[in-house]
Amino acid sequence: MQVLRNARVATMDGHAAGVPLVEGASIALDGDRIAWVGPTADLPAAFEKAAVRDLEGRLVTPGLIDCHTHIVYGGDRAREFEMRLEGASYEEIARAGGGILSSVRHTRGASEDELLAQALPRVDALLREGVTTLEIKSGYGLDVDSELKMLRVARRIGESRQVRVVTTWLAAHALPPEFRTDRAGYIERVVLAGMDRGHAEGLIDAVDGFCEGIAFSVDEMARVFDRAKALGLPVKLHAEQLSDLHGAAMAAEHGARSADHLEYLGPDGVAAMAKNGTVAVLLPGAFYTLRETKLPPVQALRDAGVPIALATDSNPGTSPLTSLLLTMNMGATLFRLTPAECLRGVTRHAARALGLSDRGVIEPGARADLAIWDVQHPAELSYRIGFNPLHARIFGGQYA
Ligand SMILES: [Zn+2]
Image (cartoon, rainbow, N blue to C red; front, side, top):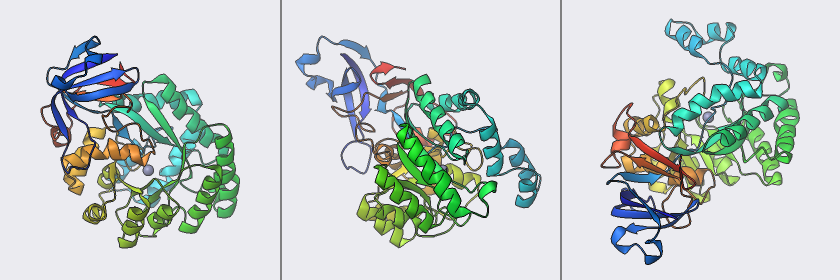
């Protein structure tokens, strides 16, 4: 039992528009759970003998949650980035072996140990900013063994670091060259067969897909979701990033936890998401990198009461981003989210996007995953650019 005293606590509970703040607060931790939170004057006598730590007036938020990443992959795409800035066309980059297939080649060619060693520095960058829960997708293997290898690496990240890792099966990310003329074969023999195997091995927490003209159709994804449902796995979807295929509506009707990207989301998608409780995960890092100009329909999502989350989309091609604080700043500056929405987007709503009801808020019974900040006001977390005010991170009740 321990008590964190003299804190300003952003509990993130309730439905207030701003950030719910408790001044002069204490938080009592019992093992890996929060036992009590409130004004120190009201601290129950039961906690009076607990070890006390004085937080000297610092802000405490729930540990941050990055609910959409592709942080495990082989190689990088810096040369491709350079070629593009030197004027190379998409075709020239593809001919030089660039694009997503370059990440696939390097991911297939790397051992589990190599993938882990490459991913950990990126993961550590997130943890240094207070992240305590991290979603990691497969999707650069595109064959059963390589996709499962990625998820094993994701699990090992959760064992190597003080962070909860949630894994996602994303074999329906791109069509590999060997299946270029056999889409149905890829879905059957890799996406579905691999899902069965990964599920049997306990490697899959959720199922995702890239629904887009350059990737998989709504019908193809519906087929993948039907199998996920048969296995009892929750689903989510990369939808409406480059065009409006109405994928978000299909996903919502399948009970998806989230639909992600959503720049081209239309009113039908917003309505379906609101009706089914699907979280909108916005990914400003990809919007920024692609120099997209079409904004996601933030006001329509707000008006419909769709919860909005923010994530890094950390990936080698369209969002080589490993800062959730910068993501919050981008959410505010590029998408006009309020600082309170940005903070809710990386705590409470991000937890909901992952189906985790025991975190993202500071309340009795929730996991004792906390971030302690050297700031006065929660808005500072999304206001600054390239500044990390994290004082300490608590994971499962322990300073980590
Ligand atoms: Zn993504």
